[in-house]
Amino acid sequence: MKGRMSTEYGEVLIDESVIAKYAGTTAVECAGIVGMATISMKDGIVKLLKKESLAKGIEVVIDDNNEITIDFHLIVSYGVNIATVSENLIQSVKYKVEEFSGLTVKKINIFVEGVRVID
Image (tube, rainbow, N blue to C red; front, side, top):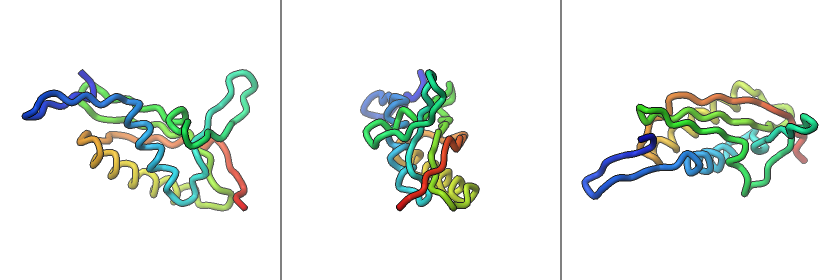
């Protein structure tokens, strides 16, 4: 079963939503990230998610080898270097999620859905 680890004390099962919330919290701590985004299916408008809804802008898949793939849908700050922000996000999230979960992060995909001017 996905996200399952055996320990000397029993089985541990990590739900994908837990990984999504942890990854989202880590992501918004990165410089240049305004927040997670969602796209309205009705009108195609990108909306910034509130802090308590971060996981809605993140898709997590744990495969049969217990390897994690994370898709981020982001809004970035105006004027940042997207490549630099993305690299920082990937390194931070990979390190922290692997340390937190004990599972391997195989892939992180970043979809920049919008840009915001920050006061």
